[in-house]
Image (cartoon, rainbow, N blue to C red; front, side, top):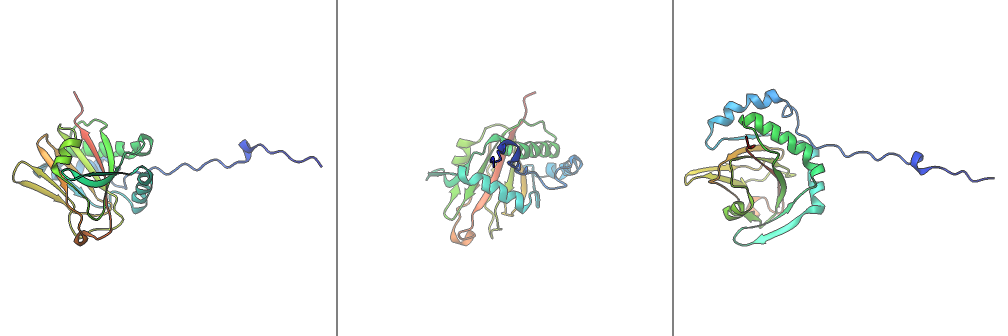
Length: 214
């Protein structure tokens, strides 16, 4: 009997594409973003924090994507944490959606920007000096998605504008925060002590969208 020869190109199942990570409805609707513009504009600095923008499954997917790319950062006068620069193909659909949402809420024309994932475990922190060294010193909208698997008892991120305006952002998985940042604004992430969630990590995707050049 002559052995049967098969063509692996036709018999091998096609790979299943990874699902795209996108914002949850109604965050994908332009009218929803427009309806939030008045609330965003009334605060100083301009700010909005919204729950349930990202599903637990999507947050888990992003954490998995970030894991092999994580690298440590540890300079005492700047901060201690891990961060990941993800391939553009993995983040581009979500980053584009975040930019469109931020542009509709703010009423500004925004450039494509950049994004990173940060992991703050027990003992981790970042200082204003680290923010000053890493961010673009231009007017921009900063969009932050909380990818943490569980909530923490204390706010982890604080923005400041000038000497007296302080804006703490509490930790809430799935939360989307938009903050308009001027060249003078600053940000730090509080020290993660045992009383601020123990061994649980605080995980953020931060995207910065500077104003587009006219």
